[in-house]
Structures are given as structure tokens and as C-alpha cells.
Amino acid sequence: MHPRFLAAFATLPEPLQHAIRPILSSAEFSARISADEAAILKKQCGYNDSELAFALLPLAAACAQAALSDFKVGAIARGASGTLWFGANMEFSGTTMQQTVHAEQSAVTHAWLRGERALEAITVNYTPCGHCRQFMNELNSGTALTIELPGRAAATLGDYLPDSFGPRDLNITTLLMDNVDHGIAIRGDALEQAALAAANSSHAPYSQAWSGVALETTDGTIFAGRYAENAAFNPTLPPLQGALNLLNLAGYAAADISRAVLAEAPEAKLSQQSATAATLSALGCTDFSAIPLINS
Image 1: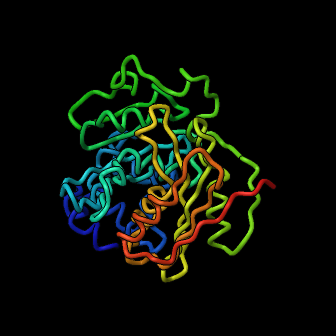
Image 2: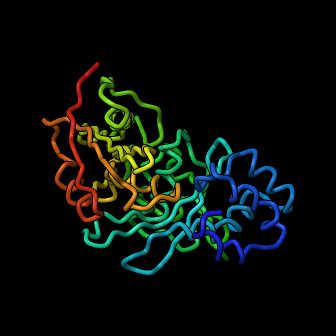
């Protein structure tokens, strides 16, 4: 079991401790509970979907990197597949506030980057801020997404975001988590290919500035993040944050990054390059390069 889970694990109800220990102790655990594992946990502990998600929140919050606020937020996204995706807030010393990843963004992006195609519910240990409500409004589940908070009746995103503004107001038909292929040629070494593949399925319907970032760790593991734009612009999540989110949830640290690649179109309306380079430099990664997108 990763050391970060030990304190949270000790607070779990004893039946859940017994049931989940083999999952947490697996070398393959990367902050997600498969649909089959969730079914076993529910059966052994007598939980329904909501009860299991609430019970797992301390483990999700244990993944938080709250260097600035010391305020740890955990989120659990339940996919249409039945998989439970952990999320936690991430903050980075030496960078701007805009680089922060909120727990709800973390859980959503975790699911999206790992191939989930729709979400049914988000369970959070604190009320979602306006930034996160707007971010979630970009999803293909829309305002029907269920939001679950401790001590409150389940509600929808529409309840938390009345009179919302989102992609549908701008006639955007391809939504966050929809399957897309921008026709980008995949080439280069493994890390470059990962960055290009991420850009190829990124969500940028407002700028068409497709981009992806891939990070390689000292042990050769690769984590790739895609750009995720938002109709309100500011809740947009850069591709580096997506990659850092996966890296953190898998139990790695920023110090483990040995090389990074950004893939984007040089002529795009906006560029991720300067912000990506600055953030990586603050995190101690100096081996950074950018490669252009080419249509296949």
C-alpha cells in the first residue's frame, strides 16, 4: 500500500478495510476502482453506489498535493462503465494559482484520460466551487450529472449551476469525454507519440488549438495529458495539468519527471509552450521540447 494511504486507511470502517486492502496493496493500483472491484466492495460491505463513494473519499483526499492551502479535497467520479475514479486537488509551489488542479477536475480528467466515455456522478467531500461547476458543465453528461456531498441529498449539476452557460449555448456538438480524432499524424519516439496521441483526442472546440503533453519518469513510465477547453474559457485545463494529475494519482512525484514533450500546432490561436516550460522548470524538469502537429 502506498504510504500516502496509510492514515486514511486507518479511518475506514473495518469491513471496508478488510475488503479493500488487497486492492490498495496491489502494485497495479493507480487510484481507481474497477467496476468488478466496486461490485465486490459493495457486496462485502453492504453499500450502494453512493455509500461506497462516500466511504472512499478519505482515500481520494489522501492523494491531494496541497502545498499552498494545506486543504485536501477528494473526489470520486463514477463512470458509466461502473469504474470509480479518484481525484484530488493539486497545487504547485513556485508557479501561479492558475496551474492548480481542483479535485473535481482531477477526477473528471482522470476518467477522461483513461478512456471513460461518460460520467454518472461526482462525489466530493466539500461543495464544488463555481470554477468546478463550470468545468463539469463541459461534460457530455451536462447538467444531469449527479453531485453528491456529505450530509446533503443528491442533486444534479443543474441544481448547483442554474441558468448555466455552456457549450450547447455556442452550438458545440462535440463535448468533453466524447470520442474524437483530429487526424494528427503520430510519429517520433514513444514520448513524442504519446504527446501527439493526446493532442489528437484533445478537447478544444473554441480555439481548435489541439495540444497534448507527455511526461516520462526516471523509470520510463509515460503519462500523457490532453488540453480540455471550457465554454467560459477560465476553467480550461491545460494538457500539462492533465499529465501531472495522472502522474500524481499513480503515486509518482514531480521530482520523478525526467523528460517532457508538448505537441501543438505552431500557428494555433494560442500556445501552451511558455506556461508549460515555466511550470516544468518550477517543478525541476529542464528536459522539455515542443513538436508541431502534422495532419495524417
